[in-house]
Length: 423
Image (cartoon, rainbow, N blue to C red; front, side):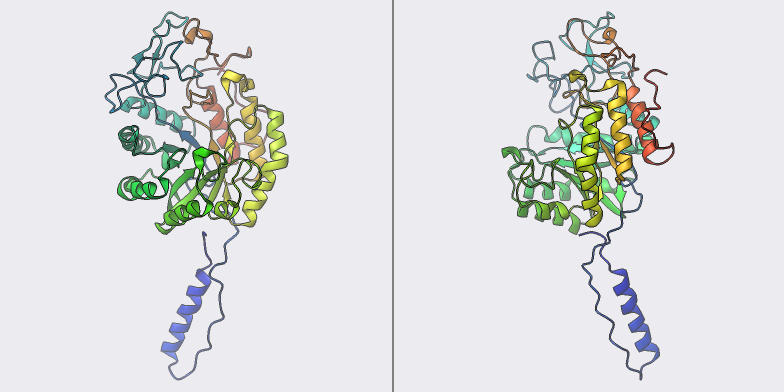
């Protein structure tokens, strides 16, 4: 467990040594016994995740001809060997690609404005650079780079993306850290430790690698979910957490929404495992879809989560969602702002945005088609103005920046969204 109360013991020991040296003939009383396992229950000080707003960064889009080892339309298409099209698509929202210098033609019809329907590749250095520049320009503090099982087909691409993210983060003054996703990773207990030791730990030498309490940050997403894709025992997961902590890491847990309720979406007997994390970040995608549901979670879940974390010396980093655009959840930003407002009121230590570039589930904050002029003709993709309110393509980046300002106390707490959908 973190922040153990060692300072008092060290001071007492030092005093005893000094006293025995200066007063050799005077017996020194034995120091009182100190419980070195006591956990400091005060929240961690502001660092690179505490007091900050971090985005989840997939960085998983590729295209044929982009120079990537996979050389496929990775995550754009269901059949990766073919360009995305109305009958072969893996996305639910259309990106605004006007800021990218290198894009790739798809088999969709031209956009309604006559332009070719093109997509970006995350493997392009310019793509990663411009996306991290957006983070810097819009006041986002850092990115959690998703890392999946590196021993499979995706491995070489994920390795390359880690290097590209490091370069872009350093260039743009944005923090980043590795976020392991253990979904479907059968041998994660041993392979993750090897991956960290032989590859990912080298990233912590970067000036841009996120540090908290003087320790490099690592997140592990997926412990305790009650499905066959995360079928790990509590003991196995606890050992992994402790291993990373033994390597000097500050470890965040991406855990089930109802992690305190062991009969809900969390596996039984995992509460002790969750308590070992330095910070907890419960998953919220698919749990709420409007401001009223956010209010319900604030009253019935988030407040109790925060109280539990406060009582156990754990930092709390709840998710904030822009909402599923394809399901018309966004309400031109009112849904997302309500979550910022509620999480500020609950007193959380950090905020995790789900997600930056998740066009597959259409809960991305990165630049998105603002009107139907910028989506492929006949595609049925919804644009940001779907509810009749015009929104600029960068609106959710600006909204996230303003939410971060409110979270940090730069602007007052307000239930009224200050961000204008169009400047």
